[in-house]
View: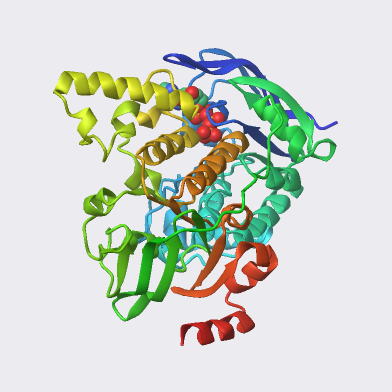
Amino acid sequence: MPSPVIETIGLTKAFPGVVANDRIDLEIRAGEIHAIVGENGAGKSTLMRILCGLYQPDLGEIRLRGVPTVIRDPRHAIKLGIGMVHQHFMLVDRFTVTENVILGAEGTRWGRLDRRAARRRILEICDRYGFDLDPDLAVEELSVGQQQRVEIVKVLYRGADIIIMDEPTAVLVPQEVQELFDNLRRLAKSGKTIIFISHKLDEVLDIADRITVLRGGRKVGTVKAQETDRRGLAEMMVGRPVLFSVDKEERAPGEPLLKVEGLSLKSGERYLLRDVSLEVRGGEIYGIAGVEGNGQTELVEVIMGLRRPTTGRILLAAQDVTGLPVGRVRGHGVSFVPEDRHRRGLILNMTVWENLFLGRHRARRLTAGPLLRRIVMLGEADELVQEYDIRVGSTGQPVSSLSGGNQQKVILARELAGQPRVIIASQPTRGLDVGAIEFVRQRLIAARAAGLAVLIVSADLEEVLALSDRIGVMYGGRLVKEVAASETTAQELGMYMLGSTTGAKEARDHVL
Ligand SMILES: Nc1ncnc2c1ncn2[C@@H]1O[C@H](COP(=O)(O)OP(=O)(O)OP(=O)(O)O)[C@@H](O)[C@H]1O
Ligand SMILES: [Mg+2]
């Protein structure tokens, strides 16, 4: 049996009001792909941050290749051969791949020669592990998947043989996930150890050798991927059986509440959106499918008033809101779950309760004198925290101290509680655990049952198919196909998403 490369014994880390890691005994073997799963707030990221030297444990021991070790900080971790690939990439956009890789690495302070040698080593690394990456391109020209490769090459360049990745697939499209997994398999084969976190249980079962489940800061167990399945894992995580599909009742949709007519958006000579028309009726969920970067983000930004369309109109109920600022659009009863929760969804250094009221703090019932307002808000915030199962010590904590999934729940709670008529949600369940996904999907379906118009944008086809009544596929800034969810399949949608020729031909017919 391969010896453990990392062992933790009784590892414990507490934050005010919560024990994030509670006496965790973990054993990671050399050359394995080891997945860590668990609910939002279970303590996964905390554990990884301890292993890469970002946090110090309060109690417990780490043994590295059998030797008790204190990992002082991330620099020390990398000296010890442990490298972390963060979810928010830390790359300099204008620098080339080579420049980014060598930035901050030792022995590269002198001019050209070094750079040439570095470039050669980067090519060697890419070649050896099958990374498709051009060392001379600027990072700003790379796709998300390629940027992630740069981050991985960066830690390999520094000599890491243990690579830690926190939700690496959350930001990738299915094709990129497969490429990443090919890379990871080759890394593991050559003796590198991979530890990674994911909420996507199918992926975990596909790529991992062994899986450790955390719940409420404790380790529930470690299982071999071959000896479990999605249901088994989900139950270990949540402590109860999880529904993977939500039932939707037949419902005759009502009046169109959101209408988009001939929307185009030009940036320079390029069309980011081209003649997009669609309508979402009350009691209907309309799903936008597409590979990221095909205009979905821009469509939502234009509808919300974050960008002004070049041509076209946006109607809410029957009112033209084209060009209105986002606050006014919201004033028409539109809730918005943005794709980029850090940039648009939250104010990170404000408290949880303040974030729960962002954008709706002027509501009448909340404005009867400052003191009363605060008491009412704090009370309501507690209710929302209960209802949405947001794992937080107190609502007075800064929202930045919440786990990733719990930050997403704060946004969802705020937006769904605001009694909207229209909900626009981008990637509503990204970063959420299986139990939370089930809950959010039920909520969106309840909104549909209550007669709201719901527009969701998701890169996850399974999600689009599970929730939507109708689905529009975006490709190259156009809505290339619109179908009833009951009359299509993931395969068919996938074909249109990739702009296949038959799909594209029909698309042209559709647009003309
Ligand atoms: N810097 C911090 N200050 C205060 N509390 C923190 C801090 N970091 C984490 N926590 C708390 O520790 C607990 C575990 O958080 P962690 O980020 O490890 O969860 P996670 O398993 O990664 O969840 P997710 O799936 O949502 O990313 C949470 O309750 C979180 O609020
Ligand atoms: Mg996390």
